[in-house]
Image (cartoon, rainbow over the protein chains, first blue to last red):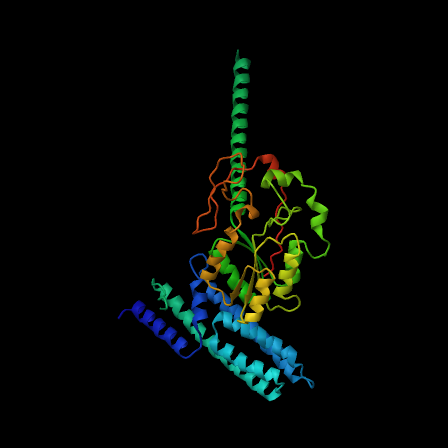
Length: 152
Length: 251
């Protein structure tokens, strides 16, 4: 099997895994659909923006949760933002953590919030690593003169 | 003899130079007209969302469908863009006097046609997120509907599917309520809202038999794209008087 074929196979398998494991969902497919020749780096750009935003929000949440008197409304608004952007991005696991996170904010459960924050961090790192691997595969496929397989 | 010949040659050269200049001027004018026509032919959407990822996605979606897009990150910025920030009711002050420049370009102009009388700026559609810090999409909707932009369709977007919220927005005059994340098919659907009342949005964009236009040009908007085919060119005089659009795009 030649290099290109191998890469494309790898790509398809890896993508399938990401969906299967719930790292990404259908919304991510929608984002990918928006990429074309006029906007060839669209997904990478959006992903970078998302991860930057995620980090910022996580820092804000951490700060808010460190206070003596936690302003849960503040934390909740950050979580709401993250929930929205992770949903738009198709970052399913992060979005799901946010749903639980919101509940803890509403019940003003500091420990619960801190646990969720940790989970968000964890999922963020994992997704970032996974997507970076995906993008690398894409670049390699293109470099070898192939086209990126389309997800069914 | 010689001086006579030289004189003619000079004249000849001058004439040629003049001709060439005129040709280039004509070309430049044509190009400018074409660019402006292109600007005019695309529907202009004002998109309001506090999430910059959503703005990025929306921008891509809209541009993919050939819309012109202006993005702002808050209701206040949207009002500022629309000239509504100083809650003075501009409608009464200006509805009586029609500025001649508007008459020439747009034919019949009335407040609420989706075009600002002062700047000639046009907005064909407003899309706003519902949940935003400060002014919500619903508040923005109310402000717009209570202003001279009231005839511009407003679409509300939300990540939450709450029937009472949807009802409230539709009752307040929202054209459509879309669930996020938006898809290309959602955006394509919006075209029908834009084309619903053609005479309201531009008197020269769409061929409507009820109009008494001098030119018999057939202007049609295909259902596939929202780009109107060529309309008659503006006269240079008018071009000069028309102010340029000043975008406040913030991403």
